[in-house]
Length: 291
Image (cartoon, rainbow, N blue to C red; front, top):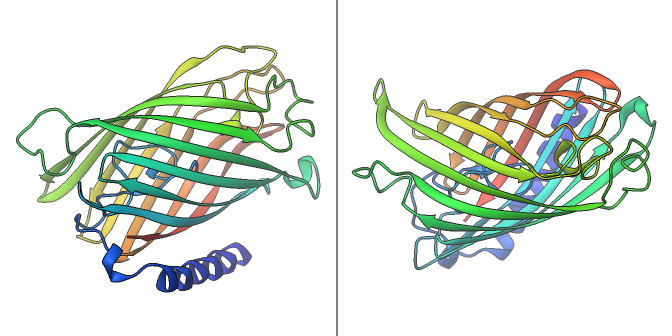
């Protein structure tokens, strides 16, 4: 309950900031939920996986974006508090920043690791929503520049090679209108080139592998109503260090767009092994303000 309380307090804070700093003149004209939610690295997408969608509600003549805050906790006591923002320019380019503070549970009592991520995404072709007559999806390419502020503390000790790394990805997203019992269906495939251990929380590269590998990711979302989306995600990760076997991350999520400018997301997430703890699963809650 403490994490739910923290989540609600931070959502309230961002609502106040939104009211103060964003006027009606900045309101984007795209349809509800067409910027997705914000994933753990600050990019428009699902909770785990970057999508080809550009953040916010800005059209090809507008600037959009979002603020977000996410809290998560596994049954083994690991915690993650993530906040950041992204900006979509002319529904073509997206810039993002996110910072995660990862609490290490009783693996290293009272300690945490901070990971900073700066991202840029470029929509290459297509429109996931409006190109219904086209078979091809919306396609985007992105770069995530990551820096681990506490590399010398735990990541280096377990065999990670680098405090910083760059992930490269290509995402393809398509929305199929009235595809399942009259409900809209979103499908996404993302291919990541990465060296990151646990998204970079445990550094980059390792004593086992220190080269880029291609890791697939998949998302699906079904719009139960115009405001509620239920879905699932899968994201493969590399296995770079020999002291533990890293596994894929999975989630099942429910996103609720209360109004056009505010969404809440809850999910059950399975992160597999994290350092010396197996089968780490739990819940995350995320709040997002969009414009």
